[in-house]
Image (cartoon, rainbow, N blue to C red; front, side, top):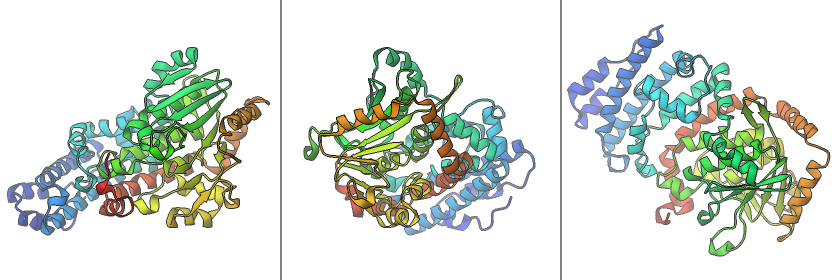
Length: 458
């Protein structure tokens, strides 16, 4: 492999050691048919390049010359990663999974890859240094994670194995499953599950932030979904927002306000959040669990109160029945943020049609429960104060004829709507493009302009 126009002069002009720059330039990998040789060569080039980048100031303190040098250096490293992964991602994945005989979660994939091929993706230690930085000062290390995952998902066998691995129950859920089966209650902090008759109600509990999602809510939410699916006494899962503390809605439930934009701006949400979320609990809502005892899949009801914004609105695409209080707002503000709204680009057109989906994703169109144009997103509209009764009635209706045929029909619908390879290919593109969006200066400026993020308290 040869990379043209390495930015040696630009790096030297900003004060980096000519000796170190020269050693990096001389370590450019050449083509190799051997995975081991190619991995060692890529590692040497990437680790030397990362060491050079680490000597530059954080992004907000760079001069124009330093910004240009950093851009050119990042481009060279991205080219090297992409070239290596294009040729050897399958072999890398086989090494990490013993030829796909062992499951591997996304978190393990990036960690293990950083050990097997140093420099390919950031190590745990490097991420610990990167994580406290505001989004504007991130060094862009997480782009490498997006490139790796995108390339793995692009491979049919490896990609399907990774998706299947992410559908396994989490260790946290397995630890508390027996207790939940016995008591019908589990408090996981940011998520709470309560069995109510033949249903289990999963409450998103981030009350201080209007039930927004962030890195701290992700694990508990996935474990909670697992508990609902694993529980033998539960036939239907119900998604609901907890009662919040915000003065405007004090004592009331809010379904969800999407990703925590203040945390995102301050760098407190990792890029991996997006992928773990959509390949984890969201995909489990849609496809169920894969367990040693067999596949487990149940019907889901969403109970929307006040609004379903962003990621909360995305959940409406994967549940089987949506009940919403009249006037509840449903929308995807990703356009103003500058990110991709999860798998909505894949799923929303099936619900509302291509034109309306484009209007929502590209131009910020909103829906209100009870309006005629929201009927394709909402199955049932109720008045404030009627939600509990409506949930109970819907659960009774869904379970009165047994659930064997319901699960079978659910699977049959999914096969026609979203075959696993269609989802895999979408997520491959999403992994790469969302990484660029997450690390783009435009995201920072959008959050400042549309969210006043610089002046909000966390």
